[in-house]
Structure formats: C-alpha cells, structure tokens
Image (tube, rainbow, N blue to C red; front, top):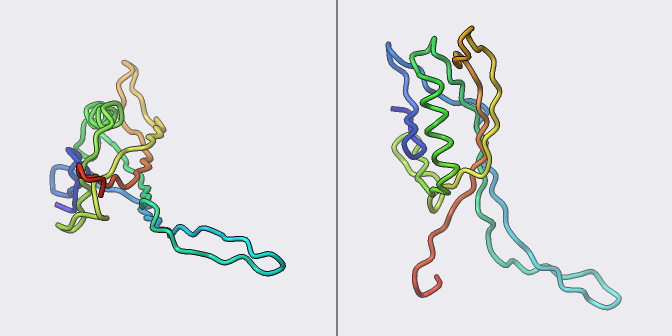
Length: 136
C-alpha cells in the first residue's frame, strides 16, 4: 500500500493500479501587519494556516478499478464533509485530518452504454485541525 485518503486506498499490484500524480502540499505562516507612523510596518507572526494539498487520480477500468464506484466514494467524502486521515508511506500527513474542498472530474472514455471507462479527478484538500472542548 502506498497510502490512503479515508476509504480510498492507493496501491499497485498485478490486479489494480490506483495511484496519484501532481501531488503538492502548500504550507504557510500568517503575519499581522502593524502600521508605524512615518516608518515601515512591523510584522508579527500570528500562527500557521492550515496546510493545503492537491493531487490527481486516474480512474481507469483498464487498470483494475471501477471508475463509478471510486467516484462515488469521493462524492461521499465530499458530500458528507468528512474529515479523514491522509496516510503516505505509513505516516499521517499534517497535524490533523483532511477535508475534501473540491473535486474536479474530467471524463475521457465513456462506452456506448454511458458507462465511465476512464476519467481523471483532481482533488483539493485542506488540513482539518480538531479543537477540543477547551478551545485548544
């Protein structure tokens, strides 16, 4: 197993290829700007923004996956606003869980019955930090 995003397992075997490409993580710091009369503003570090992640997945029946079932799983994660772990090489990524912010679908091959044979999906994820009852 390469990793997973909730119920979506990334793997390569003789029967199935479910991987991703164009994997990117963006991390950033937040600063407040304090105006100084007649001088340059001062910056104050105020924390970190939640990390963002993007990746693309090819869902192709020729690679052993059922594109409709795979897409339904992603729709479920998006529609249920689920915060789920993103695991890569056995390690959770980021400091928390991840939510699926957007899902772009590009249909490449559809058969004469309207069945999806191959499509590409692009996912945009945002790190979801759980807050305990004390607000921290």
